[in-house]
Length: 322
View 1 (cartoon, rainbow, N blue to C red):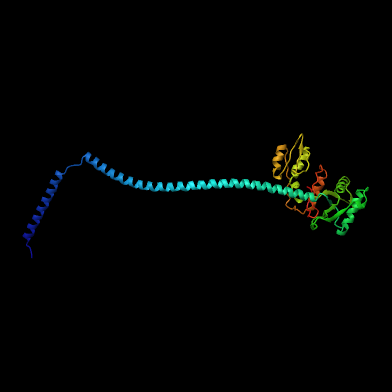
View 2 (cartoon, rainbow, N blue to C red):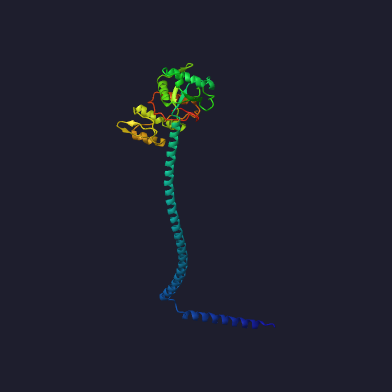
């Protein structure tokens, strides 16, 4: 259906009238709305705060409950760990005491074995300087002749030699020093007499002076070598010492001090008020260096003679008293 121009104008006028009436109604309603007061705002803020507080409190209580459970679990585990640690400390302390007792027993047994080893060597004489040109089958008659020259008032038949042989190790290719000869005398008094005369008047064979030493256990030689700085310092300060069952008991004035372990050497020297000088370590020096052992042994000739310790001729001898 087609509308005329007049119809369209009439419809537009009606629409404008409706819009005007709507705006008037909205203005009328706005004029009648009650404004918010401070009390209303406070009430709304209070309600909002209460809601936030309730929500926050519930969330915090939930989280705190979880943390409390975790803390209780950690406290339980910590208590168990403390109990375990306490038991472990008790066991470690007990094991430490037991290990200390076992260490003392081992040292006691080692000292006993060393003493037995030395006692089995008490009738041995260690002779240094006998040339390697003396063949093994000629060692026994040669030693008998040397001993007979020392004890002129004793017939050759009274010096009974059970065995005589060189140290059981190969000759050193880097040294001209001959291997030592170990001689076991049957009668101990004869051996002691030979040692005394041989040290006071060293015999000479084929132009080479022979040196007499007491045959000692390797462990004893090692201890005496380790104590070399202390014995040197004692000699320099004029303190006399002797070798005994306690390894080294040096008398000082009216008092006597005993050293039982090599590890206590520094404390021992500090107590006596002496200073130790340790020799420089030679990287080219080996345990089979006969020259170094020979020089140390010759230096010992000027020392106070130690108490003799017995040893076993059947065991390999590798070093002298150092």
